[in-house]
Image 1 (tube, rainbow, N blue to C red):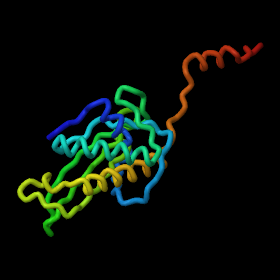
Image 2 (cartoon, rainbow, N blue to C red; image 1 turned 90 degrees about the horizontal axis):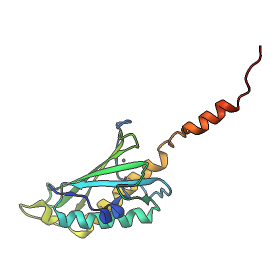
Image 3 (cartoon, rainbow, N blue to C red; image 1 turned 30 degrees about the horizontal axis):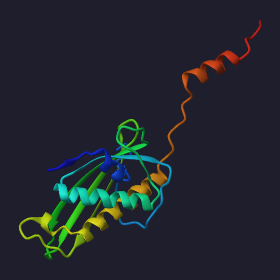
Image 4 (spheres, rainbow, N blue to C red; image 1 turned 120 degrees about the horizontal axis):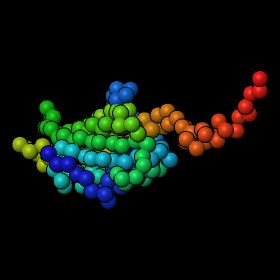
Length: 179
């Protein structure tokens, strides 16, 4: 298995982003835009490096099309995403590229799981990865972003927490009671 963690690549794929809710969503949705929600892609595992690299690039393009805010792994993000890819031959001789994305919130609790698959005509014989072509990868990346963006647009906003200074000022500004 390959675990791809590169700052430039993560910037491109961070578009992903999704168990506290323990929900699973299948990625068969219409395209949804999700601007302004910082997301960081932490990893993509399971695929050979060349598939991971192609997938990451296409994922970044899909995120940009959906106006998603992708941030590097070391920057604050509302959600952090970890992805897993697998390839397998189908019963009818095609190839399926399956994906699973776990989306974690700021407290590192899984907020959503997104999964789906892209099926193509390629056949890799004994190596299913050999049957994964650009078309299959592009569809999986697009479907991934649709499902993640769909989650982002329905995710509850983070609660605003006053900082200690504001809380102190508020307490000091209150008049003292006289007896």
